[in-house]
Image (cartoon, rainbow, N blue to C red):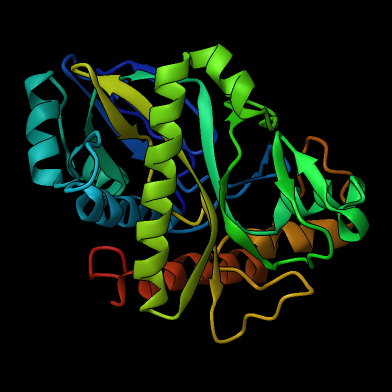
Length: 314
């Protein structure tokens, strides 16, 4: 593993936006997304990163964007660094060895799109915030209606839902996304686009869940972002990575409890037990927590794709 990249800097190229994990540069007709090794938990960015996390997320997004291309348009162009370096050179950027080391494997060239400010969440299992809301609403005893969706009573934590459900949320640049009803989403983005995004999200989830099952994985839930490019609905941002999806081992699946997952849940659990008040500043992560979290991300890639990480990442 390499030293974590916490921020990117491309001399001669202005930063367009910086999120919790990604740095975005405007190249004119396209955008360059650089996925760093930053990691956040409880809406706070940790002081130290996870080595190669950005490379794993980039490789896994590339994998899914290519898999999904026959079914829905997406903004992915390429993550080939030789081509990206050529695009940067055309902008007057000197792509030296230091910049290559910083960007290679974690950079993705994408189409521009007008992005909807909504997270499109699909849940196939009762976990995370949905389980918490279900319990608080008395769903275990009598069922519950959450964000306009009625769930039957008697469900256990991590139970498979009768069918996948669509639970949109606000898209917060900082802080916590808030769950909203589909009716609220329609008000925000328009009825037709809301319906199209809901259907696309459910279709992608079902396709991805079926493909994951062949590798012994359960795709418990995931979230997508969409935009409009050339008048067409377009999948943007990332696709089905451990930062946006909850993956479980089918062999170890046992409803009635929280499941071990291939994502940053390990980090969240450690932080919850550390005594940290979940307010900035976050504590320095010890080496074993960093290494174990990195292994979770790498294992997610191997389990999803059926192959170990390529030599560029490993």
